[in-house]
Length: 362
Length: 96
Image (cartoon, rainbow over all chains, first blue to last red; front, side):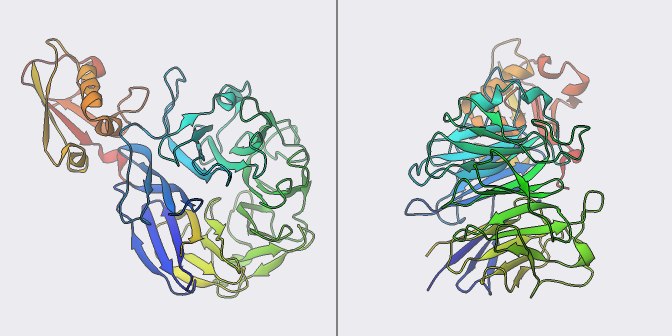
């Protein structure tokens, strides 16, 4: 019997779910001693899954905790896991992203932070070091914070090439390294910046999220602050693919783990409304890399639904068929065990959901 | 000289559940020296109180006796032997 594990990071705590059918879930609140969980990660590259959480207390600051027993107990090292080094003149506000490294490097974990910076762990996500090549980029002083803060929210290691990696931040846009992080170049060709007098600047875009297909790593999908885009050349150029979506604003974008042409988004009316079109909770899926999109709504609220889904509050598991999960700012969590065709409520009254990840753990 | 740091409930787990942390510091020590000493003996506790730049976190208050160090000399507030230092969460930092 397959066991599924779900980690739901909210503004007021982390909630963990267990299921064998992705329909019925047993939920419990993790005892972190922290308030918000802006980043969650389930690292299944080793024999025993490790759950990582970027947590922040309104009083006591941010940290990263980990659990090797699916959330029963949590560890935090004496040394600050993610900390700006002396001389950087910066202090960590929060961790926005915890991303396992390449399968060939099972001890490598990446962290994206506010202020915008990239950190690398070589001990499975226990402690991290600042990637100075990006921190010392000459563009950095001109990156401007979006509504959520100046954050690096997306980290995409190239699954086959250790020297290549793509990151995204709001604002700033997309940056890529081809030399293992020593140098970084903006990679925003074709992505519009609606807030800028020049709508196609070299950098400065407010990119909300990127998703990369693991088997075709040069294919990436991007949800922008206005517009959905695709790159087929590793980010060298981007083309709009939001054609028949009811709205092209939104935050999350999730590539199907096995089908390179299938992608999921959660459209919102942008920019000044940020509620779902027609007040309906709908995920949209394309199965042809963005030529057409189909609404997925069975089991989701279709009347008077006003909540948004944040950039890390929608994700896929590694099951077959693929499971999809979304959490809303109104505290509802829905799961699909059939690639988005139908959905079941996991919870309806949690705090607002910031991050969600799921995995097969048994 | 010896000073005593009183801790609020959420921070006591870092000192084995104790309500107070006695510390020996040099004569003429200031609050910064006390927090440095906390950092050496209890690094996880220290970083709940101040960030990596050494700034006391925005929603944490530190009192010397009954005076908030924001109204004194902040981190340079000078101490005397036997003084009681109290760490308290500010009402402004509650979860939104």
